[in-house]
Image (cartoon, rainbow, N blue to C red; front, side, top):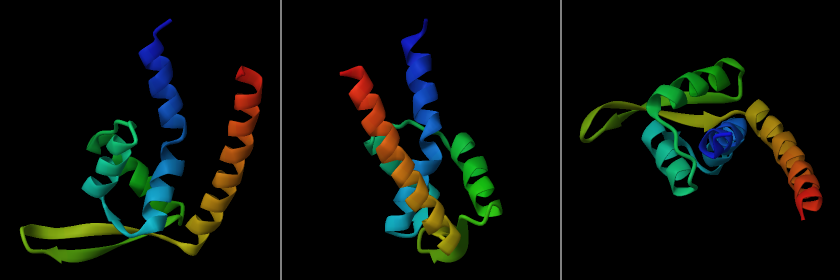
Length: 107
C-alpha cells in the first residue's frame, strides 16, 4: 500500500471544497489559488486546476472576469456565485460532520 497515493487521493477529494473556500474570501487568479493550496500543503498543478475551475464555472458555482495586468496579458479572476456560496455552505456543513465522525472513530 502506497501511503503517498492514499494522501494524494484524500487531498483530491476535498480540492473543490478548498478552491471554493479560497475564492469565497476574495476573487482570485489561478496562480493565487495554487499558492494558497500549496501553503495549505495541498499540491496541485495548473493542469489539474484549470479543468476543475472550468467545471465549477460550467456548474454555475464560479464566474470570472478579465482584468488588465501591468506585467503581461490580461488575467482571468474567478469569483464565487450565489449558487457557489450555497453549495459551499453545504460542503462546509458536510465537512464538519464528516470531520467530527472521523475524529471520533479514529481516536
